[in-house]
Length: 253
Picture 1 (cartoon, rainbow, N blue to C red):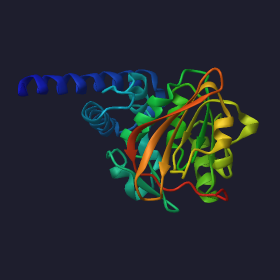
Picture 2 (cartoon, rainbow, N blue to C red):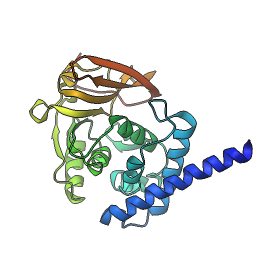
Picture 3 (cartoon, rainbow, N blue to C red):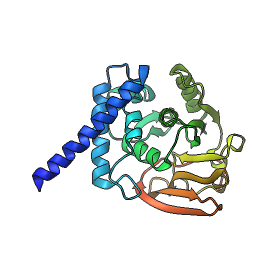
Picture 4 (cartoon, rainbow, N blue to C red):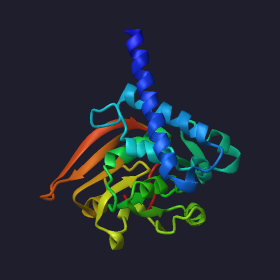
């Protein structure tokens, strides 16, 4: 049994390496740095966590397309310079102003749950440093992203321009209310914990669309929810996993 378990883990790691290699082939200049080994190790750990704890929807694997993207996006470009040595550790990292860049496993799982296809319109609530927005863009999404912390929003917009992602639309604002001018959206991802699912975001979700959002009290028990709007406009909500996020801030109740 132990030998079989080792072989299964080895197959999982090899599949990550394959996805990472695909990312190198198609990622162009994004992967042209000296952190490729760190990304490979990160992907191996993400895959192992998915096998051990589940990646959501009752499966034990992350979509290889998502792994390929994580294997070519330079995560170290999205953390403060003093922390770049820890950029690929499978844990959140502070990015200033009381905010964090999410753990790689959580980025992978949330992106996977959105089931993004090329050309999908996606709204992100909480730009942060811009990492998740770039992951979404590399999945082929048309991304609009809102950040309430103005200095972070300015820094992220400049970083995205520097890295060649001028097509990602960003603005400063209260994400609770969404961005109706850019909607409706095929998918919405919220990267801060709300006390409840914001009704304006549900309204801006297309029929057939998905929203992934952490819900719960700040710094207490939180659940990652998958919200789906059916073709007839009815909405379903499922709890996917326990998570821990910084709180969603703004002027809402």
